[in-house]
Image (tube, rainbow, N blue to C red; front, side):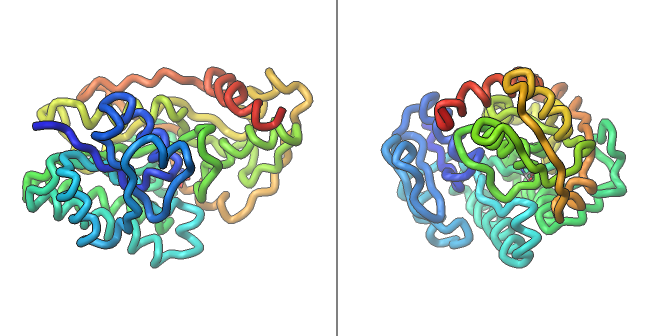
Length: 316
Ligand code: VAH
């Protein structure tokens, strides 16, 4: 069957780059981008776009049927920091959008679904180092609770209805094509903008806050990789741990100083420190590497070099 892809949340940090990648791979006309509002000119001019409320089942069904969609990447969500400000709005968006797509797949209108989970499903009682695939999971954020619940429903729809839904627990993702959103890990994006613009950065996490992180190129490759894997290789239908590196604000600032020697960082932790303190410092992703061949490519210094190289023109 011919592949027709719908990306929901195509204007977001990952959705933007996933849309570009899939359009280059499959052809623009086969990749329908959608979001609650129109995107930038580059996205709007690069292929079909639909303004779509992911919470509106009938509207999502219309797009799926009209474009004969086979695969859906559901990237719409409210991230951790913003979700703490609007708990019920975050819960409703993160859950209603997932049920809409799972039910369309259950009804045979969609063949395959990608749904992103997050290391936010882990909590303060989870082992912090080399966090296992299966372990204690007591998330203390709205975002983490919605992602943990979503994982349970993905596994249920796969086992009960045979829905081919695939998921990975993203670490913090670092990229340069979109500005930082409402994520707790987004300090690791903002720091590059501030380093180039002001040669200093006031970080909302403390220096020693080590978190699992990943460069966007790795995240896109993992996302498409799990969706293209043979169905028999996907042995975990809740969500796979995924890792590349771990670093803290002090370590990323040292990496930046190799290129901007006079860069200075200072620390003013805010409410996001409590969120970060509830998350692991490093992740064991051996299941993803064993089951569907995951391999990361970017470490901290390689990421820093690419981020600064691609952002420096904006601040020249
Ligand atoms: C956030 N970037 O900070 C997201 C991510 C692991 C964190 O899910 O909310």
